[in-house]
Structures are given as structure tokens and as C-alpha cells.
Length: 290
Ligand SMILES: [Zn+2]
Image (cartoon, rainbow, N blue to C red; front, side, top):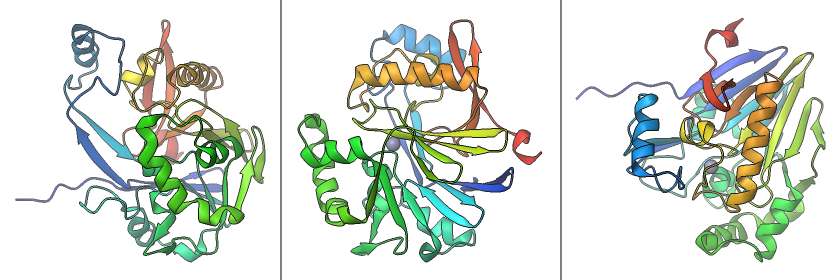
């Protein structure tokens, strides 16, 4: 059988900066509700799927860490699954990073949106830091929430154990970010709580251009973007996640921001368009090459 060929790396110029997205992996999940549109009837889901030419019984979840090259400083946002899964479905970030001309030792900053496994798994490889020379950054609220464990929902028990095993031993290596804090020239952390208790997104500003790396604010390009009001099983505080999703979708539409979303269809780069009283994900195609 012929091997399927699909892009796993996308690199483009963003003003004087360079942005690369990597496809760490993908999973096919054979159900829409849950995780998505949990307030909709099966009939409504069929209708939404048909209107968007997608299946109503299956979706592909892709994972896209992002690398920023900011005047020679390399900033990696999220680390993919790393070695957490040993089934060949995900954990390709490191290999793809090397294939695209970087070395793990060259990464200057590793910045996390939040501590779910598909974002922190690649923090450690073979028992050591994957990116040994990096400075590590994470939202203070996010770190504290996982550390204390008090408000972590029961379905994230294993995830908390992963945090304690992987991240906690390296706590002294971290810089803790507040809402609005500048990490490095042009890159800002912004609070986007809800998907996890202290989830952060990152805004890159280059001259008059801005791009928002929104992490997991919306995790399906149709169901969560067109129906931000619907609860999502992946969200640790569903109500807060809904409020954040609506706010961010409104903001990127009004400000016409380019967006990178960890779970948007690879290469995970696009815009949000407002249609009537809802939103549409619009992949960025040739705009990136101009
Ligand atoms: Zn995720």
C-alpha cells in the first residue's frame, strides 16, 4: 500500500520573525458528543456536520506545537506528547524539529499554554530535559492549580500525577507568568482560563502585525468555533472555558488577528470570520507567503 503523504511542518515569515508549526501527531476519535457540542441533540449535530462537509460520528484531533524564531531567539510553545504514548500516533515534535534544521539544545525558551499531556509530554525525553538549555515559562495560576490539586477535576487525576512526576521536580527552572506579561521582546502572555484552570495564550507583535497562539481556547474548528457556547468535555472549567472562547473569538474577529490553534487542522494557522451571530475558522493560505 502506498504511504499517505501529508505535511507535518509549516514554516513561514511573520515580518522579520519566523514561525514554524509541527504536527506532533493525530488521533481519530469516533464520537462527536462527548467531547464537543454537549448541549446539542444528535439531530443538531448531524445538521452542523452536514453543513460543514464533515462527519457527524468521527473527528481527527491533531496536535500542533509552535516554534517562534524571534531575531535568533528560539521560543517553543508546548512540547507535544513526547514519549507518553508508545503507539506511533504522536510524539513526533523532536524528530520534526531536527528534520527542519533545529537542535533541541538550541531552544532558548519553552513556553507552556497549560499542563495537559499533549502539551507537556515532550518536556522530558529518556528521563532528562528534552530542551536542556531552555528557560521555562508557564502561567502562575496554571502552575499553582496543578501543584495544589485542589480544584483539579477528578477526570484529570492521572494528568495531575503526570504534572507531579514531570514538571514539579523542575519547578525552580520556571518563570511564572502573569496576564499581560512580556516574556521576550514582542511576545506577551494573556490569560485564557477555562480549558485548564490557568490556561494561557500568547500574542506575538511584530510591527503592525499580530498573531495569537491561542493554545486550546477552541479545540474543534467547526463544533467549538461555530458553537462556542457549547460545553466541551476536554475543558476543566466548562463555564469559564465558554466565556473565554466567546471573548477570544470576538477579539480575534474584531482585531482581525491571525491565529495558531494547537488543535486546529494542521498547519493550524487561520483567521476567524464572523458570520451572522457566530464564527467560522478560515485557514490562512497564501497570506502567509506574501
Ligand atoms: Zn490540547
